[in-house]
Length: 175
Image 1 (cartoon, helix red, strand yellow):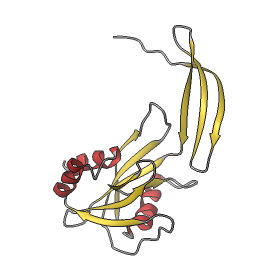
Image 2 (cartoon, helix red, strand yellow):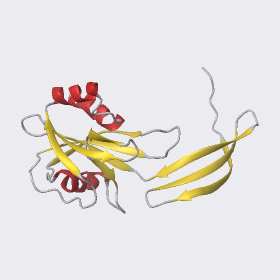
Image 3 (cartoon, one colour):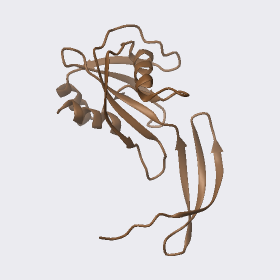
């Protein structure tokens, strides 16, 4: 087995500091001695939700995603605010994006969204015992969409669901 050694950070500078992300530039020494630069997008921890209704349908959200320059159908997701726990963030995000109040929250897994360039670490939960209500989100245009897991997989195949967190969540829905 190959031994993989960590890179030593020599210097870190901030290339950009925004509201949502910071971009840092790390000068690193590689195990063989040479140096190179790594650009890292620093992002807070996040949550994603696989919301399951009593009849088995899933609650998804359709919204425009500027980075993708298109409308995507996704699992509800968002940031963890302040000292909120991931479970509290799930409950808040569900109300904001879908209006549904959550009864039971079960942790499915946690993962780095794209560790080649970002620190973002996401916690995926299944939410059940859902009670409908009105969404409270004020800054995003969001459409709530209810689909069976089979219908959702068809949307993956058609490309309408194209983000990793939603595809991973649908894998859990098939279990």
